Length: 180
Image (cartoon, rainbow, N blue to C red):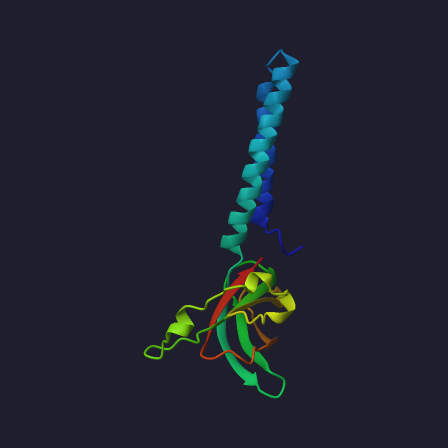
């Protein structure tokens, strides 16, 4: 089980002990309605704090870095290929890393801006059937699981194939790595 480190188990144990302590303290209450509401409130507070702590621990114990990434286009298949390496720079094993790649089309160049590029009259587009409208999104975002089960200090290569829209010009790429 790679998600839970020793720190996760210690935090979980701490909050269970805190919940038990709060229940013992609320045992002194003689009215049953008040006792059960105190137990319920204790459960809500400790479970919320435990879940929040798990996320915080996960963020700061599972550290990975995108060491290098290169891309090239395959014009024959209209794909873009990303090759790179991910390094575990933390002290704990990482279960999996997800890489989000966002491609943004930048069709506007400085000095070549025309009025038709800034303002596109929509007119009666509302009444046209959806099939007649061409969908050409300027942003394409995909998420890929690139590595699984990476040990501390280990570096692993990955390769990703992604469709490249043929109408994109001067593409800007944004990479976001999330590991847990």
